[in-house]
Image (cartoon, rainbow, N blue to C red):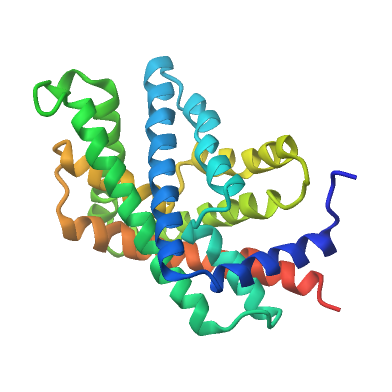
Length: 262
């Protein structure tokens, strides 16, 4: 049978979380770099589809391609690890210190990969500075999204932090479910279909994902968005990362642990 029942599913998830804590630092870093770059690719592809058709929902349908690549290749995406490793810790298969070690280096790898792709993408989209990006719908889309992910929250002040945090919770509830769904099938096509559903849901809603933002916001800055380094981190990256972690533990890891607890 292709389908994996919930009890076996959670066993496999916690084992995967344990394995993540046992990876060598360099492997975490390299796998994290690949994940960050692949999600950058998926983001620009999604925005290309959205700008060419005028339908943002088309971009949302396209975006899960990046997550499929990451999950099928068993790479390191810190936002997925925010559920898998805590689940392993709850089941006493992993310890807290190795968990935070994975989070730190996975986050670093994701950031480096996102910035690497951002730098190369900006060279491409601007023809290395020889093109007026005001005529590029794709470049303007990225700038608008980047400013919407920072300056809009900044204008709201304290309320902006609440909105941002809630959107980060809603996002990673679905992202971690995407990682979970990858384990519900033993076939490649089954995994792809299962992953696609929750990732499509989060992207279509425009929620806040820490790793996607590692690409979108600095790319917008490179393209001329009116965003400072502190705007990026204070009005998005830090709060969104905390929100993503909270959702992974509370909304995914703990419920799965509890309902399968013997």
